[in-house]
Image (cartoon, rainbow, N blue to C red; front, top):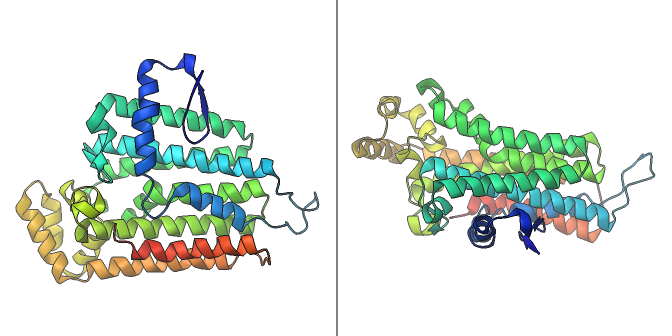
Length: 334
């Protein structure tokens, strides 16, 4: 008998306790079904990237990569690994943030407790590692191992930052890359590497993922201030109430330096939250954040446009879908 995660990774039943069967079949699957990045379904992005790069490689020593079912299966495995790493990071984040909801449903830590939520995240990471090793490609393994390191680094940056760094846009963007964009960018690059593309094309795939991820998170930070709890599936003003300073507040501080003093006091006092929101409302912080997101979305679209020419309709359709996604990201409302 085997228990099976929907990603296709089979798990021997005799290695799982009743508890883990429950986590896999109920808890984790509920999370997988509801909590992939809204608008960005990571697995679909990577499968689109696979098709977008489905073309012969000029000057290949093997005469061009053959796009076999085996290659497609390996690319799909990357998509599944990425989704497992992503969901594991969400499970762990919710424990760290003491969250009780995510995307409108009870978070796993709220429903089943912190210990089980942490174990569920660890379990997904372990399955991702097993699947990753099966690819037998050291460059791809290195890329996705780096993603896990970046997720930890980004969370550590958020938890242990100094007052000076909290108020630095450069520090914020680096943290955002580690926590959100590294996963998408390095997974897109891994797809290109498996396809046998040139270093230049691999860099373009990486650039698409990096800038799409940054644009997504910038809009997410805007929605934390402008969205409702119903549309976000979590409490609005979640970040600022946890003392997390994001782009809208950073831009507002540029216009109103006195806001820095409020930020330094922290937001345990709701009066400080109200003052910060008052300054934000008078500033152009929200619009400047949207403009920055648009800037990164345009870079992502340009990366796809720079791919080698192809007259294959499936390739062109996938590229159009990837470009369309950059615009959907910056226009989303939840």
